[in-house]
Amino acid sequence: MLTVKKFNNISDIIYGKLSKDEYQFLEDGQDGNYELALVRSAELSGVELPEDLIAIARAGAGYNNIPVDKCSEAGIVVFNTPGANANAVKELVIAGMLLSGRKIIKGSEWIESQKEAGACGVDKTMEKAKKNFVGREIAGKKLGVVGLGAIGVMVANAATGMDMEVMGYDPFLSVGAALRLKRNVAITTDLKQIFRECDFVTLHLPMNADTKGMVNKDLLSLMKPDAVLLNFARGGLIVDEDVMAALDAHRLGTYVTDFPDDRIITSDKVIAFPHLGASTPEAEENCARMAAEQLDDYVKYGTIRNSVNFPPMELPFDSGIRLVILNRNITNMVGQITAVLANEGLNIEHMVNRSKGNWACTIIDLDKKPSEAAIKAMNDVDGVVRIRIIER
Image (cartoon, rainbow, N blue to C red; front, side, top):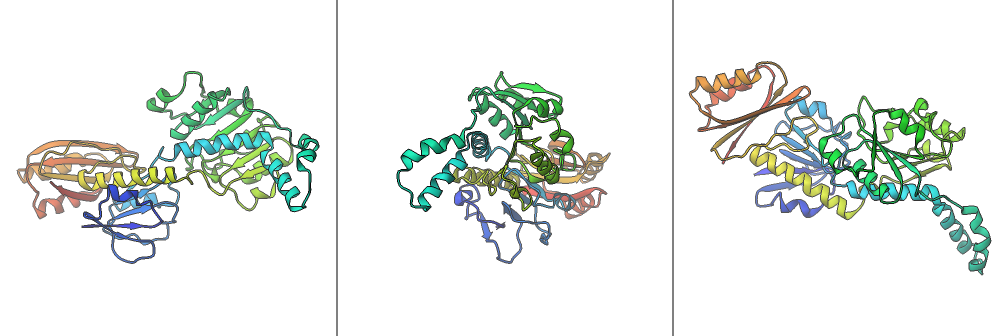
């Protein structure tokens, strides 16, 4: 029986897939060995990962809290759950646009101030006060969506339904995402055009070496002085100092973010939320369910879906023995592995090999189990980091 370590409070919906009849669980803070891990926001970079760990599932899209490179070297597949919280984030983005335009927060704060002052006749005084909270509608305004993954597509489509003109940018736009986009969403290959023309710009892309600090003074200098920048992706996508300078110099109207820090919240032109993007029971359950399914499918079939470090793999399993081999993406790996099997007289019934960046995976179905000597010989192939044997 495999052990699953839960590093955060994860919805009990996981037990529908990771049955307690098949798995045992360690709660956060409990010591012990484990082969699988479920995590939301817990920081794993400083955690000593056990040698038996084969997979980590992040119940959410971002994975900055997981040492992915370290996991790859150890043959640990890291999953995330893109799209599981997309609707929750989409709704918060729409709310952010409305809040930035309609002075809803300031108007509500004025009502609270009247209540605290014990004022009477607020129904009359508010008619005079409301002129201080005049806002603008989002219909007819232009929205730029940077990143057209699951969330970006949903935001773009929802905005067209609110009579906004929408322009999207994604140099890695997938066929599936393109098919889900409504026809009236324009696509541009020029990121500067988004920042130059749009009244609202919303970020929906991962943070990595290429995107960290991408929104800097150069892009901000192109924006309209009353434009709104929305960041519900990752705080590190922007350069704090440059955003603050743009707000102070009236080169940017408002910054709306779900990733505040001590510097950002000092400006009254910032609307910030305490990372509420996926904070709905529906989103948490969707993420937990998806993470649990990915772990269970990897354990039982070697199936890899939504891994951030290894390629997608799926092969019907109707044989008795399956090898799941994780290795560096270098030449002649498959040849060396299959040569070991041929020398032992083993028949390969099915095989699939795929790569992703520096890493690759091979699934091989055999008619019988390899000997310990054959397994050792394959493990000794330079570049192989883990071999799993799955028996039906």
